Image (cartoon, rainbow, N blue to C red; front, top):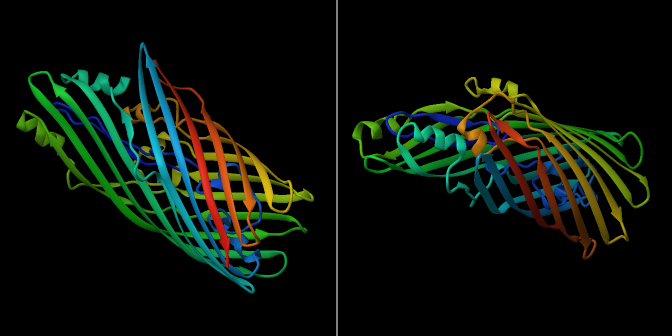
Length: 398
């Protein structure tokens, strides 16, 4: 899914504002701990987030899922000099509640689609691109920091048509907020800074369809519509030169169109032998159909593949292994300050997880994944990034 991060590098008497449409602070395809390792254990308490039509196949009852991810990013840029950036997102929460009765199921869930609450992207010494820009206007000792989060609440339901088909329909409300700040020293003399906050909200829909071609196998298709977002800008700056300060606050009160792109998800899962479940999930994100005021032309559409194996050791204990490859859609020739501050790079991830059913109603899960990002380049800069994710969740059926 596309992550939003605004990184302002306007300094001196010249303002330059760049929006990183392709990337949020924490960029992940996972919302729950089990999904980090691709676990598919049929507990049903988290399924509404990924395949809402499959809630129609659950047994009657109320299902509750609470999950948290800890995401730790390390970013490195080399251009003669080495610059280091980091993100420590300790809490990326989600919660889902599903009620199933006869052929109908209703669900509501909250998750973080983009970014992370209580977390900041930090570059204590700036980046190569940003430092080159600020040097041209006489500013040194630059530090960058940004925070970003997009929250989602979805309410919907599913219906079992017959023993082979089910459908789902839902509506979602999305609210986004991004804050970015830089601080620097003006050579003649004094300090300069700028802080920009953007907020937006919007509505979208979710449509799902399931097919059970044979016992033990499922094919799911989900489409989440684009969400129109018009961000309002609140901008404040300081500068020893009054005219320069006014220029740095020039975008205050303006509005910027930055849609959340639509996404289609294909899920295929089955049990070839008793106790072994295999699953394939493909996410396709329609960046080119979003309105980013022309910036969408700088990106291709995203596509993410995940293949997973879940193995039961006994009815209570199971483990899973998941592999993921993501093409992030950033074109090689797109150069901007935000690209090196928070690069959207193609990635390969491996996840492992375990879950244990304490009784027939209560289960707990723990997972870990490591993501290796392909090296990126902007002019002569080389960009590298890695990610560690730790997930924990609890599921309960009433």
